[in-house]
Length: 228
Length: 90
Image 1: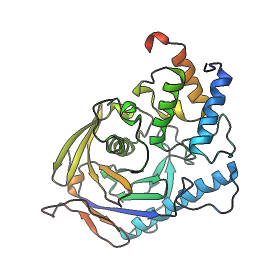
Image 2: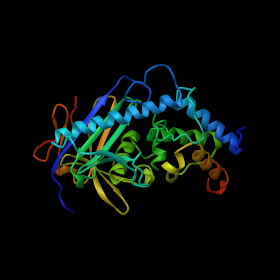
Image 3: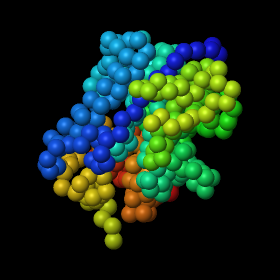
Image 4: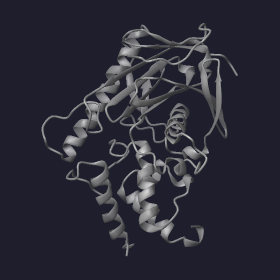
């Protein structure tokens, strides 16, 4: 397996709570039109954060689009950034993005820690065997996004092995797919976020806009840290 | 007793999504793209699974928790119907 070095940039934006969107919708209208507007707002926040990451990497003008790996649509699907690997995740009032080298195969997922987790372990095929269902879900979804399959395949088909070494928290495996390394990105106390990547231990992870180095191969004791 | 006709299943699922995932009075059709529009955040699927299992007394296999089965009310209702029609598997 080849080693891929480089810099990965993570950015996030938190909004006022509510609406399932990182941007508050205006007015009291609750129609499908307002839902569509909030979706567009959410996509706009994701795109602006991707642009922030790209700017930090010296490629502010890189084209940002979308590409569905399943149907080829450019209307929905994962971020498609010229010359980079990228991923976006939304929680109820938080958007997180990550951009890095094209071979890094990045995937990121964030969920609110306050949400009910009833049924999560069962949906992962881990009934009675999960000590932290939310963590088990977020790690698997980050890996699924990195592989480009999202929820097209059951998350229960993904195996997780705790690593806890070389700045890595765990390794994700699935049949016929290259293993991915996982690290927790500690955005704040209210959310749980994991980043999945190919050979993550060889990547330096930074946050923007403050350029904090979260994890670096050169760091003897690298751990995740608060981005804010 | 829970109604298990296709239209009754669709109605029950629509009510659940409106009550649990929307503000209750948003427009929702049988083909509203729940995942694409962010109505259902990925992990929210598990709440749907719990509802289906308790309401219809079926077991939703982990392998069935995929986007194709959950993308809209029509798809979810079809999943429920298939589980109901295969009692031996449950």
